[in-house]
Length: 116
Image (cartoon, rainbow, N blue to C red; front, side, top):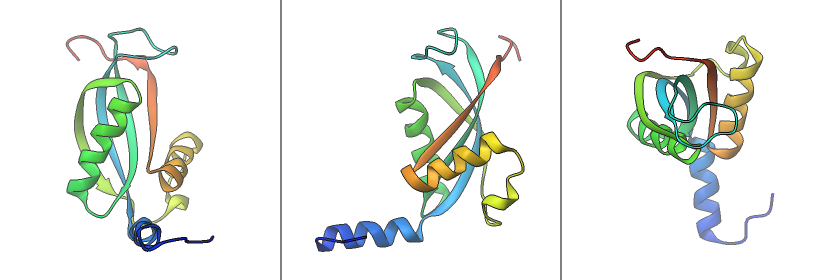
């Protein structure tokens, strides 16, 4: 990789220092070809950040950019054991995407009942 200026160097250093976090959340569909508009779904949001506080903000932003609104974080933590600790392929792929792109989201197909 070739770094052309100091800003790119600093950005690359921050990216390398970023840690992987996952958040279990619920969100409402605002823009999707795969889900009924207005339906609510469970989400697993992977992000890279320097701290849990920044990761939570980034997770909410990633969900919004991906077509989710009224996203409610239920639980979040750092994945310290690495990708190999993620047993299932779909979340592992989302975690890999987060390591490459900054975020990755798994949206579960089943709708959450209105009072659930």
